Image: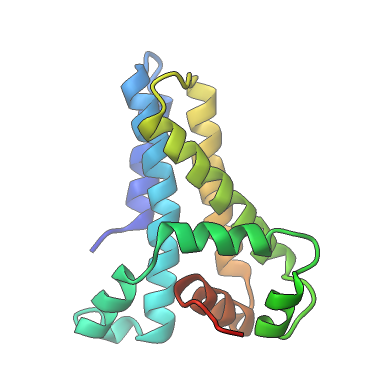
Length: 165
């Protein structure tokens, strides 16, 4: 099973090399994003199926059911100071908590940086950029853990499922 903390440690190792080459910096940024991505999927699978169900088909199905594009869309909506009417109706609240907004803002930003690192040959990264991405991934994972249980359940469900509300 993927361990998000191991992925983040690998990203930090790549970023922390004094003579890190471009490919190592890009891999660090991409890996830091994926640490956050997998931390989110793990949180959802454990919330909806449970840790005891890790070997079950349901756990794997839920884990693989997330879409990067859907997650991006929801994070953009959640990071705003006030939720749109649609998301106020779906979530039953006017604003997301500070922790949820911090998670969403970092997730969205790191996803964009991962795209640049993986697909933009003209993007230039410095070791400090990769280290910042690692720190941001860590902060986002901590923010996800701070979201209270009812809001976390709603947010994780929303990241996974398109609501018709």
